[in-house]
Every structure is written in structure tokens, then in C-alpha cells.
Length: 33
Figure 1 (tube, one colour):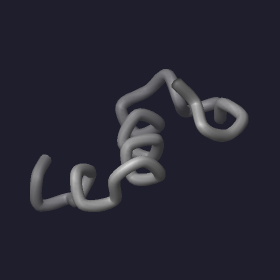
Figure 2 (cartoon, one colour):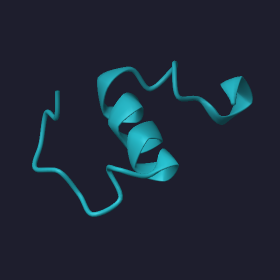
Figure 3 (cartoon, helix red, strand yellow):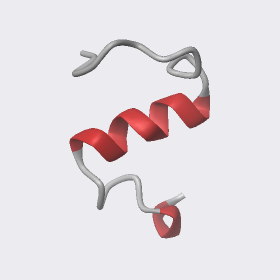
């Protein structure tokens, strides 16, 4: 699933959002939270 090397925070909510931003920036937009 990871496109790059997993970061320390990838298991957390913030890490998940960062991963979504890499895949689809619009989906992880702060306004959608």
C-alpha cells in the first residue's frame, strides 16, 4: 500500500492522512476532515 518507505507516523492518524495526501491530495484536504 505504501508508495514510499513507511514513516514512523504512518501507523497514526496523521501518518494515514499524509499517505492519502500522497495518493490524492484533494481527498485528504483539511476541509473534508
